[in-house]
Image (cartoon, rainbow, N blue to C red; front, side, top):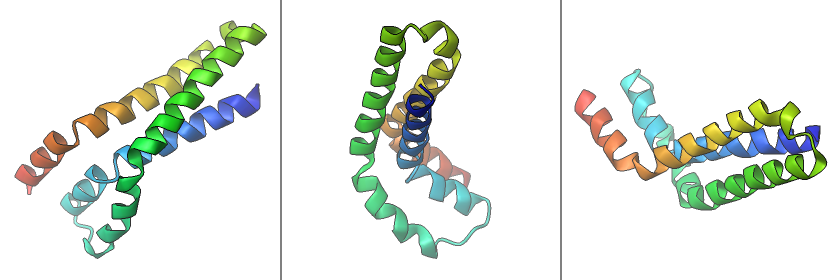
Amino acid sequence: MKKYLTLNYLGSVSALGAATCCVLPMAMMLLGLGGSWLAVFGKIAAASYYVLAISTALVAVSWFVSHRTGTLVNLKWWLVGSTAITALAWVILFNEAQINDYLIMQM
């Protein structure tokens, strides 16, 4: 079951990284970091929906497998944490324009 948790958190963190690919550079520019490296995030932004969909599938499979094997009681909080990270990634992705507008206003 530890492999499922590892895959689950790896998927959740990668989904969060893909979702913040356009918000994170703006935040780093506010902190004073240069913007010449921002072109790297363009390729990641194109795949963000796919990464989030795969991450959501991994979270769902982890919940299903832990329920089927009877380990849901022991792993409930780990699964809730990875579900929360994936949900946060979806929220950031769907509100990316508003977040970017806010960050631009802060400049």
